[in-house]
Length: 169
Image (tube, rainbow, N blue to C red; front, side, top):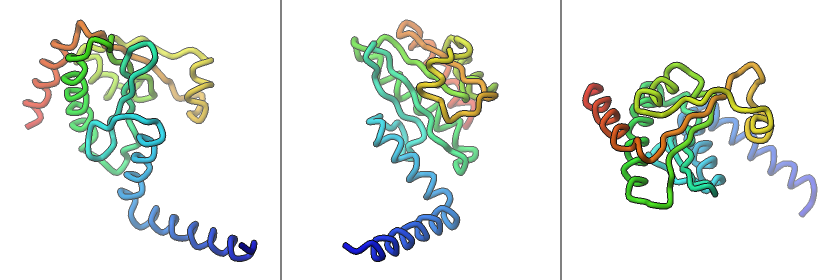
């Protein structure tokens, strides 16, 4: 194919993507979330691909929270429901030792507080090698923390999440 044709095609695609991004931000964000889940080979826990997980080589499930700026008030309920669904699935598996989370969200009062309330242990800031490997695009002044929930705490977490779900209704 000739170079001019390819350049014109790229321009048209770029303009189309920019139009979708600006005109339909919720759709664009959802496409981004779907890409994250698909590329990472994670399992989504909701229809919005907001909460997903993967099982690591050490036998721990790791939860992922995708960008959800356009989800507004749905974010916390989606997270609580997704965590409940994940724990219910994992409690039947003998090959998973627990659940981990590592993110700037874990460092936040809102999400870190939710995790702590349901039984996660907040483990504090991650080390620099991990930050450089997995979070190199996050500004250095943004704290990134980790948390874990061992399998032994699943039943308590389920109770806390069910209580949260009832109080949200």
